[in-house]
Image (cartoon, rainbow, N blue to C red):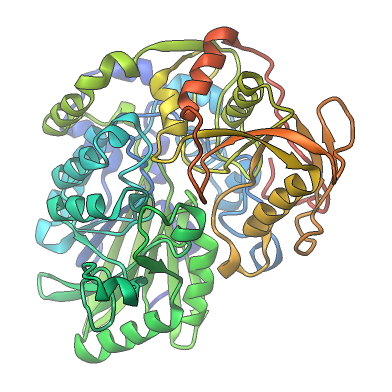
Amino acid sequence: MTKMGRREFVYMMAVLGSAPVFAKSHRRMPATKNKLKDYYKLKPFGNVRLMHMTDCHAQLKPVYFREPSVNLGFHENYGKPPHIVGDKLLDYYGIKGNKRLEYAYSCVNFEKHSKAMGKVGGFAQLQTVVNYLRQSYGKEKTLLMDGGDTWQGSWTSLQTRGQDMVGAMNELGVDICVGHWEFTYKAAEIHKNIKLLNAEFLAQNVFVKEDALFDGSPAYDEDSGLAFKPYTIKKLKGIRVAVIGQAFPYTTIANPKRFIPDWTFGIKQDELQAIVDKIEKKEKPDAVILLSHNGFDVDQKLANVVSGIDFIMGGHTHDGVPEAVPVKNKKGLTYVCNAGSNGKFLNVLDLDIRKGKIKDFKFTLLPIFSDLIPEDKKMKAYVDKVRKPYEKTLNEIIATTDDTLYRRGNFNGSFDQVLCDALRVVKGADISLSPGFRWGVSVPKGHNITFDDIATQTAMTYAETYIRPMKGSLVKEILEDVADNLFNPDPFYQQGGDMVRTGGVSYTIEPKKGFGKRITNLKLSNGKAIEPNKMYKVAGWSTVNGKSDGEPIWETVVTYLKDVKHIKNLKIDTPDMIGIKGNPGIY
């Protein structure tokens, strides 16, 4: 496979650079197919087109989404995508000054750009782009893949147990998919949704426990114990493309295993290598693709230790990486790709396959600018139908904000801080803890905060709150444990979330230190040191092991915001950091 020049990742850059920046003026113009062709015309290349989306988190409507200002990388990942943010990212890719791409790929000038260009994503807009890219290239030569985290993240997905998103996937024409937050519904619900799917649901790394098999738990293959089909072969006008599925390997650690007690997960690199070898020998594919929900750094290590995969189309860590990153292994190169989150991007990978081999490729992380794309009428009607029963609840204005509210970033985001403050105030706690989830949209300053916005941060199947006494030593232990998940030097021990969010606490973190040694100088907000043997009143939510009996977090947040009414000059509990000077992963 020929290695493409690094800056060929945006071969639509010049076109998007000429697109109008001011969304409002553009919206006065009629949305036409010609406009779509003007701004989303990808030059024909090769003979197979793979489209890939991931981590939409059930966001059917266009959203605001601020890219992270902190995404730290260390060791072999220092200064490499996705651990480059802000101005350094723009310099790295040579796109500084291109306002459209600056808005898409970075947090730089977010408030200014969001006001000028509006929202991103939206399934009705995404449908239009997918249809155009299929039809202009040839349906028979095109695949659409979904990398998971699709059935969770909105109020409607929670109320319908993911079925609203199954219908949206079918309407969109998804061919193949994998899962992660899909597994936070009950096993019977997951199987029911998969039966309703037109797409193939793949996972080579999910197995049914032996005792569960004996008791009749369903499996794709009882001999191997595979819970789902591990791979598929797609014939695209005479070209054979193998796609292997990789579910999130730490599902029963990061999420409750009580919902899916019969299943086990893991990276399963040896099993993956065996499947790749089997496919090469038995199926004679022209291309081998891993559709993964590992996270970007895990995928890069996997690409190094498993050979024979051409491309890994990845997700989970919500990294919008505008290039296919090459990784060396025993048989050559594997390219690792990621497609961001919230419906904001669509990966487009065009392959030139001749005589059973990939000779060349072109890759584009295509931003979905909602103001440039006419809505697909059929998908819009579907989205409106799904949301109609809940519109009154979703559109309720809970508060207003003078601060931009966002979640994504290695440490406390401003929306996370609202959750932490709500827990501490409403529960009367000394300390509050909130999980470092990467899902949740942004609310620009000057906007209303609706219940819909709150639901994008909180809508999940184990959202119950708790209030309990904890020793100061346990608070430190929790912070240390999550810090190791985030900053462990071995990517296979990273679970892909961000640091636990805190309220009422300050601390110092040294990410490059070893386990149990990263967190120091723990203090309460009043400046008093947290004592290891002293008991503190701690509030939180989203308990993985065991169910809490408190109200769901969205009720806590609504109670708090209705009392506060307006967010202004929000103080974010960001830790002091040691050993990050000059790190391009902080803006």
